[in-house]
Length: 480
Image 1 (tube, rainbow, N blue to C red):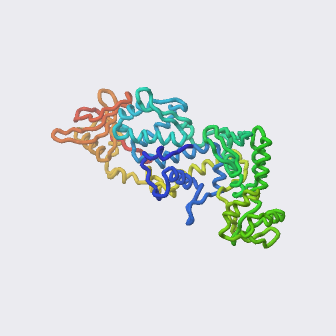
Image 2: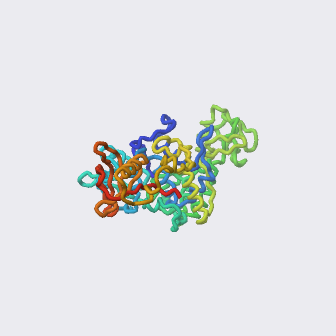
Image 3: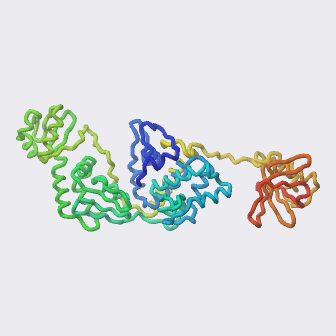
C-alpha cells in the first residue's frame, strides 16, 4: 500500500488532532484502532501485540475481506447517490484486471435517477482515487479523456463473508542476495515480513518487495530484543536459496560488536566481558571521561556520553542507543512470536476482525459515514405505528381485488397516499401498481408513479381520474 494524503483529501474526512496527524496517518491509526490493533491510552496510542499477531496470521485475501467493508463503511462521503456508486462498483460484473469506462456507468445511474452527474462526479472520482491508493485498483483516462477504473482484486468475492474457498496464509520464501538485499515475493506471509522488517530496512514495497540488511538495521533489531543469532536463524528458516556466506559472516561480526556495551541510568557503562573492560580502561582517548568501578563497569561523566559513544563505536565496542532503566526493557518494535495458525483459527480471527471493524466507533476519523456512532434500535415498531388507523380500515380494501363504487375507490386511493404505500389496479386487462403522490380536487384526480411489472417499466407523473381503472386493492405488508 502506498497511501498518500492526495489519495484521500477529496473524501472530505474530518478527524481528531488534525493539526498533529497527517491525513494518511489519521486514517491508518483509525483503521488500527477500529480493528483493535491499537488502543488509545493516557500516554498515547499503544499496539495490542496479541491482536497484532492474530492479524498477521491472516492471508492477504482475508485481510482484504476485513478492510474493504470497513473502508466502504467508514470513509465514503455521506451521500445516498455516492453510496449507490460505491456498492455498484463492487458488483460481480466488474472483473479484476479489466478497464471499465465509468462514464457509461454514471450515465446509466443518472438515467435510473440514482445520482445527478453534476453533483456526484467529483465524489465518484474521489472514491476511485482512494481505492487506487489503498492498492485495490487503478484509475486512468482513455484517449478521449473519459474516466476509467480497473480492480486489482475481485471486490464481489472479497465482500462475501463465510466463503467456502478460504485459503491459508501463504508459505512463500524470500531470497537473500550477496549484496545484502532481500527479495520478498507477494506470497511470503505477513507474520514473516513483520519479523524480517524488524532486522532490515525497506527499500521497495511493491508486489515484489525489497528489504536490505545493514549494520544499523541489525543494531535496531538488537535494541528491540532480537539477537544477531536470531536474525540468522530467521534467514535460514525462511530463505529460498540459503544465506550467502558473506552475509552470514557480516551478521556474525555485527552481532559481536553491537550491544557489547550499554549505557544505564546514573551513566553507568556496562561491558559484556571483563576483557572489554580492560580494552576500555587502556584506551587513551577515554581517560578522563570515565572511572572503572568493577571488572565490567565504569562511571561516565554525564556530559561526555556522546564522545564516549563515538569512541566505543569506532573501537568495535558499539553500545546500545537506548539507556536502560532498572526493571524496564526498551522496545519500539514488538517482536511477534511465531505461531502456526490452522484454517479454523484463521476463520475465527477473520470474522472477529470483520465484526470489530464494522461496529467500532473508537477511531480518530469522525466524518464520512457516521453509522458506527449510533446504537441500533432494537425496538420493533408495531404495525399500527406505521399504518395509523389500520384496524379501522375495512379488511376488504387490503384483501379483495375488485370493482368499488367511485367514492370508495377515492377513499382507498386517499388512504394509500396517507400511508405512503401502493395500490394494485387493473386497466385494459393488465395489472399495474401505482404510488399516489398528490390528490387534486375539482375534478378529482390523483398523480403518482405507475409501474408495469410485466414490462419492467414505469411512468412518473401519471395522472389518473375515476374511471381510469377497473379494479383496485390497497397494498400493505403482511403483519403475520
